[in-house]
Image (cartoon, rainbow, N blue to C red; front, side, top):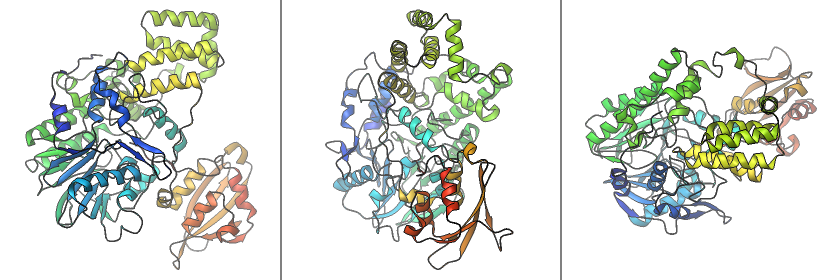
Length: 613
């Protein structure tokens, strides 16, 4: 695969990243009420130096750009706070106050960003809020902008389907995704030239309080126009692009175009390394093409929820066109190669970008990568099986590893062979061999250190931020053991936003099937629609180890062993382990059935993880 880099003498991005600077937060750290530091941009001051040999020069350059922090003017009436979280917060001035676009991840960083804006532009009230899409770095700080009791009468705009996707994307596989996100963003790594230097899309994620204020205005179609505080906004729905619910929008009177996270200054992910549903790069390209035509001639600047703006209508068109071509080419060429019979890893080795894209800084793989994105396209169409029947029923990792070690002549000989590949600078195969050795001999400190050293070198050479963070975090855990991420992924507002079927599903995926498969029970949840409103009956059936559900209308055909009459907040209490008596839940039937059902849940206190980008 070609690794032609753009010219480092091109400083356009640095000029644009610094343009419109007004003032920074000094010091650049944000703390929570309990004194915890939830964000510290000052720890990245080392990026002011030249690139060391422990980092890819291109990724170092991207980190230097992303680490810039402060309030910036985008155009008259439009401002951005950048560098106070993974994402940007944009402020648009209206007739009476301000419209906030994407209030970051944490309430603490959002409040700090708002305070920085007000320090320089005046104490204007919040008269509107817009969520560009359904990832938590674009809504989690909402309560830092509109504390409890202040949201009355303030329109909160989001794309259709926002709430469902915002709370569901990480619920079902939340535990695994949360752990992998810690690797992806390098949460447990020190911030240093030989450790975490950024994540490509931004520096890292804040670790404060995640909140959610439900939208009050849904954007349901492209061309829909909304006026907030005297500011006209024209929307373009882009579902299934970077997020399942996402939208671009134009401020026609300000001649400014918001691109959400559909076009940023890097190649984005078709499948994030933390895990997610595979995105559709074909649809992504189509919506970027639509944006070019839909808004043509109506703006002078394009800005997004990450990175820095692009000024000049023709420059934005060029940027959008190249981003469109990037995702279209990735999609089509991956399909061409898989249809020629190549497997996912073979496609990843063969595919390369055309020169015009490979030498554009904004198409570089700082966050997504051409390698893992092409594999994601393969996965979207053909799944995990590559068609080679030898891979259909392989041994699991530990059993395979033991056999590879035996073939090599034992652990000592495997270590010798792996080091020969290290000496030959074939780090990829050295990692493969040493990985087998560690799986087969998990107690071998020597094997773990050898593999950690290989991961160090692979991380230092990675242009992709998440790749670097994954390699270096893996090296850290090989040396120190599994590191627990101190990240509180629960919050009542996100839990309350879950529908009753989604809450039940979050329990169903935690049922220990083998323990439950001889039991047979039926529980009805009569969930009240309001304090005096009617209820909806949800029938839960545990049978053959599977917990299924359905809404029952009218009189149920068969009686339930237990019927609970409760509000959603009480249901959350039940799922968190509180007693029916303590919650004041009305019960008809045998309450022991509920305890029996919950006894099969492997995680008694369900977690509702934040949705990360």
